[in-house]
Length: 499
Picture 1 (cartoon, rainbow, N blue to C red):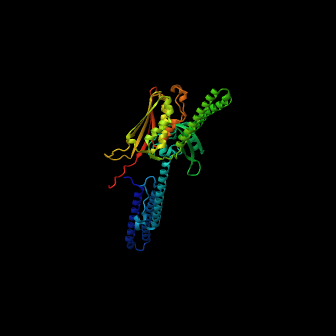
Picture 2 (cartoon, rainbow, N blue to C red):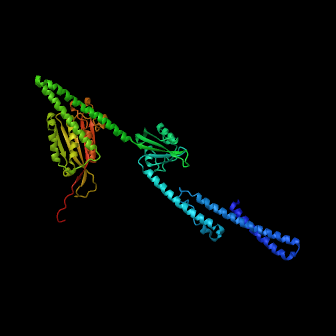
Picture 3 (cartoon, rainbow, N blue to C red):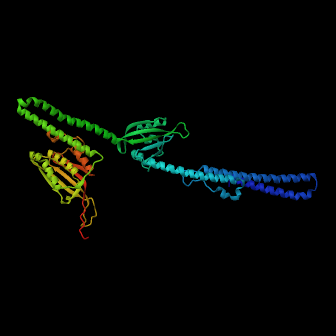
């Protein structure tokens, strides 16, 4: 078995002790027999010296062992790792050595105190580290930090979701990977390189991720080295601003479309008014026709402004609902009255088919009327003449497991508006709920059927305000079925008296 330094020190101490004992014994044996001869005295002195030397060696070896023990304990304290909770410096050193510590007892006491302080500080650092990781992981903005080897040091869950990695957060699947593997787009690599050079950069970058094409507001910041000079790494914050960009674009499109829609009737009214001024006396028939044009475009402006106001209110995050019981009979009569002229002009019929289960349903009657009015208006506009527009209302189950005889308190009301008309081409069905989008007039047959282009957008936002949804099925040349589903409530049955 190889001899280690501690074993050698122990053996040396033992040998020195034996040598001292043997030397002392020899000296005691020689003293009576040497008499007074000079050589005898020399021998005694030499033997005594050897014994003293052995004692000194033993003391030094013992002290060396203590010093080595102190060094070992100090190194154990210094090597404590906060990453491993079980790797903590041992305490109670002086207590373990007891009286055997001797003159090193104060040193061991100091090591005990140092170990306690180090352990306390390590726990505090570990706690702060966990808190910091939790904060970073809870951030909505994707964040990555890289080190001086250009590898990912940490990343949060948002970054993993954006970049298509899985790993559970700060210590997740991107950690340890090279930056060139994580960022494959030149713009991102350029921003990271600038941060590594000590520069702070911000830029909008369009990227393709697992979530599709996204627009990111990227902030690249350098991380200073702990020693105060140079750059250790970089922090990349990837804020997803796709929806903000889309909202800005929608606003720009909205303003452009609204300006166009307003310009057309205003121009027609102006031209008609200028012509009417001269023709009112000379050509009464022309004057009457021009007056009709002014009236029709004024009504179109009124419709457009009404729809713009409705849409603006519905898009507000603070839509106020007024929930109450809906009178479906009165609602049907109001719709018949509102479209009486259109129905008569095109020989159309309105058919209302409401299930009895809808009686007593509670929701916002104004928004429900807004949905149905816009859907019926579209159906009357595009249905073939002489056909029937059907409005069907059914109650979809929301609560399951109701006992027999138990009253229903919630459900989903589904309203379908069905027409037999020109239909909507498949390629355009996904866009009909957009603001100002209108199906190609070459396909719908007549520019006279042109509306404001806001009706279905209003329907979508009204249904959304009611926590509902809308959709449609249509076949070109056969007709369209548009549906809206909204959650409804029912008042509980009154408890009979005496129960």
